[in-house]
Length: 101
Image 1 (cartoon, rainbow, N blue to C red):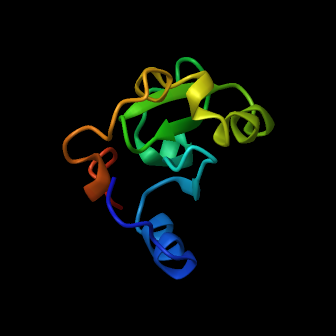
Image 2 (image 1 turned 180 degrees about the horizontal axis):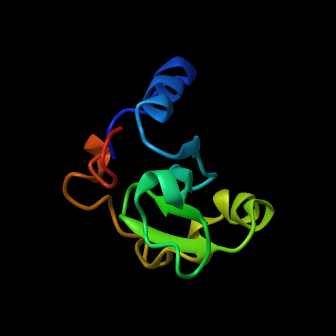
Image 3 (image 1 turned 30 degrees about the horizontal axis):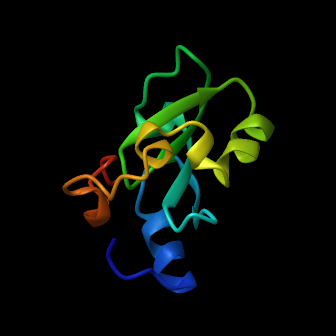
């Protein structure tokens, strides 16, 4: 994985992404985002709120913001790449998982 972003860089990156509410590092060191799927242009059939593993481009939908927040810090429970202990996929560290606003 690449160098970790500091708080200011994370805030700037969050603000540059449509629908992004939070970007943070999970305890396993992976950058995870919480998105409002509607302004982010994501599929909201499974729920409006999206938790995204930025390292592996894995997205999980939630019906409530509270549930999405619960999943935010445990990507190893829902991201297949994190479960398998894989390194970041190509381009993910360059924040190419979701389009910028």
